[in-house]
Length: 144
Image (cartoon, rainbow, N blue to C red; front, side, top):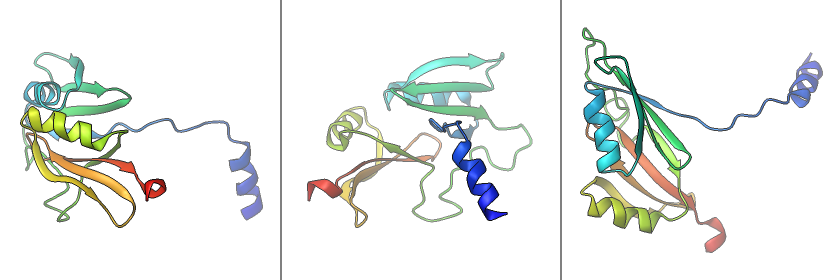
């Protein structure tokens, strides 16, 4: 049975290409404008009136923003209340230092400035308007 599953997996032609996290927020417009104005994303659009969903993109990275239900216990649901020092999305970049300078100049909330980690990533952590944490990192294992 194990071999049959391996053979089926080897024959698969479907490839995963990217992932787009969905953050539940109390105000879609405020969230999207923050991603645009502070984090340098482009707003791809709003859905429904009043907007209950938006997609923002920067380069190849998309983040979906969905409005919290009116009866939801929490207006936003980042991971940090559930796990200290957690993040909500990890985004690979080609120049952490340049991004750090850009985001700092836009007054982004930098939770952790660029740091080399024991797992050979140079990364920083930013928190958005509603508490979602984004880590931006690059592999530096070949640079040591």
